[in-house]
Image 1 (spheres, rainbow, N blue to C red):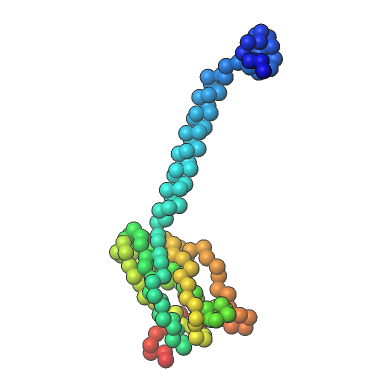
Image 2: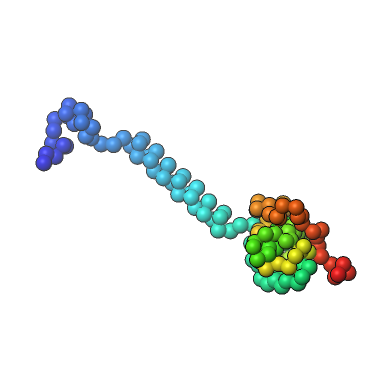
Length: 156
């Protein structure tokens, strides 16, 4: 095999053998650095959302479900959470949007979701700072609707 750098200069130019331009190498380095910084910032943002939430406990009664979850956020932030209660066929029987006013950085709110039938499944669909999270809308069977929220003991 022939070492292309041993060819005469006119053949080296013809076949693209030669030193790479310093400008090209600098531009490639800058582009790589920008890509690393952008990827790192995106990963950090996704790994540290402004609001974190987790369903802790729930119990179901014939006409409501009591749900307790945790919220971690900046104390000055209002948080909106969405809760869904479903039956054995995963049809919605209760759906509530709960607003948690600014307060402590860590809270464990409890909310009673009124249901139109006994629930079997409870989901905390999500929480977001200042506005309702982007989650699935209610999925009630045709001809039914969400009962008025929240459930209160006086209404038994």
